Length: 350
Image 1 (cartoon, rainbow, N blue to C red):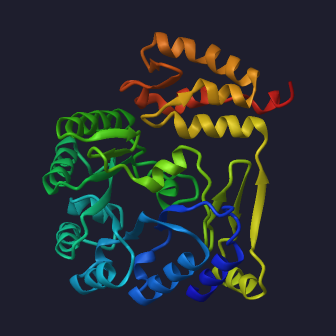
Image 2: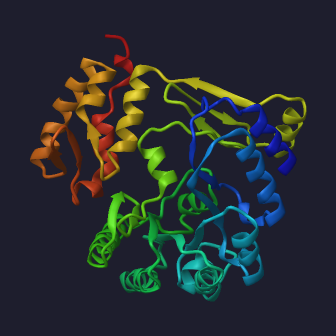
């Protein structure tokens, strides 16, 4: 797999048209299973074919149970990885057992301490709220632990029930309760209050960072910058189209051996480009800019301004010079707002 990834980096070297890389992200699946030599080989291929900023953010997603003192030391000393994204999900044992996570609460805490000891100062962790096992007190304790560690970046997500997942099937069969939306909203509001009091900035609905510690990789995605994805299931975007590799590992490697990139391509229509812009920027502290919408077409700007008027009246939107962004209460209904602002596909042609 490592050899196939390195070969695809070569095959895709022109996708970004020579733009320097500000971030490199090892994510999806379980990249922390890679050893330091494999990570270094992949990074060497990236540096061979791309100009990488000297201060580039280079992140590795990791599960707590994959991180021990020796592995972390090798990552810090033998690879360019300078940031860890640790999938903690919860510091509560009952939450982790309900989520069927492989790590324990003790391993969750240890992973943060060991990462610090190895010299990683740039850390982010994932936390989940709204689970049936997570009471308001449990959630407050989770947030308090994260803040006590002084972790500079937090990604916090509400539990969602997706079709095709084990949880989705259990809910349909009545074996699990559906998500309590009121509890999830309450815990989200507590998160906003606690992080703000601790000096964090909510720069995207689910992401909180100390000043100057925003995730460069995530921010680039929300701001619509092009990105290249390498490996099975990886997605790429260049402003006018997106493409995604097949998910099957064996078929992916076979295609790469034949010097073929096994992807599907979608050319984005003007309406899709507008809707994608709304979907990503509306979630951020930077908001949606009217001049960028106007560049996409007058009809999109007219639709946007017409649809957003009642949301301003409801107090869901903040009006800033040349742009709009969600208010605190608006963040509670962000998906509903985005759907209202989307331009209908049936109106593609003027």
